[in-house]
Image (cartoon, rainbow, N blue to C red; front, side, top):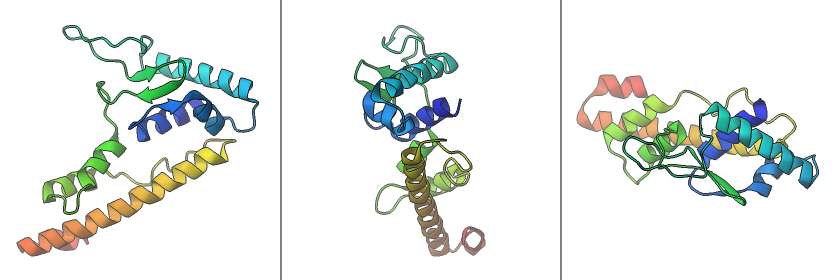
Length: 169
């Protein structure tokens, strides 16, 4: 469902910290009572864990060849496990554009990762707070992409690679 996708998108893009269940429930089901929103979150979380094959999310598996869960789930919080075998394009993009002067290779990687506006055409349905959050992320990433293109063009120009500088510009 769209709510399960919204939950996954939020957890992936905000994977740097755990999120309180009541915050997630309020974000995705703002018009529902706290009890109904919490029940909807439990159902969405169950569907998400089934969809990504992460039913044992409360246990961290470390054995030979075993992987860590994608989600870290407690009674109070939910977080995407950055130590798992998941890869998040937004996180990878952010890592490559961070720093005062990213290296040319990082800028090239960042530019190749950007596929267009964040969650373009997707909404949280009856959740204006989710849509506002997504819009903020979309604007931040678009600005970072624009800055990365400008920095990359300048670096190509400094190297005398005017063909690539013009393509990027």
